[in-house]
Image 1: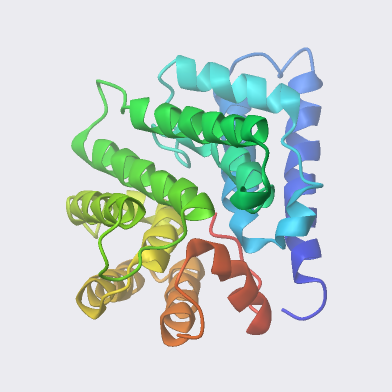
Image 2: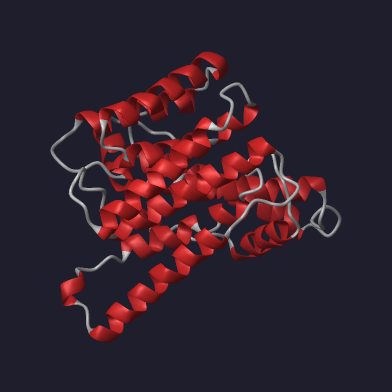
Length: 275
């Protein structure tokens, strides 16, 4: 898609915001119902998973609708299982906060002690909220594994926003943390049968995890998984995810990282949302 690729995604999110806000403000249909629940879920799904496709500077102008966000937290508190967010809507609500944290990522050497403590506290809070998340007790095995896969991807999204990608071999606390999280993510992905419909919701976490993997064997595992999903489901987003990961893996000028996906999408004129 040529032209303003970010603008197209913004327009999509704005349209979702307008539709859902209109429904929720209607006294007859805006109360808790299957329709309003789905529309809230739809807005959260589109608005959060689209952020990584956008220019980081433009993300600053994209704020989640407060009223809809409140309703989304109510869904999470009620153990809501949806057709788009599964049992992990609470995790998706953390994505804008991680994105904002990454966008305000200063050089640590230039921070005052007070600012450094504040940044560390924000990181620790986000990490704790992700680590503390667990699937609803009555979730089936596929939903549970899918939610835990999202959980590991979200941790990688946070870690690479401030620690950088794994260094590919040299031992360090940051590298070990990223590597152990990748291992957990791939464990849960392997536990999700490729022929289940839930796979249509996994492009975002597959892209995040894939962007963190540095070695060829595990990249092959991810590539083969995407190829299998494309055979079974034939969805454009699956093919787009494979295309952008191939581009990231082929570009060795800079370390692989989820935070490079937007730049590569722009360079190759790819305009799509992982939602």
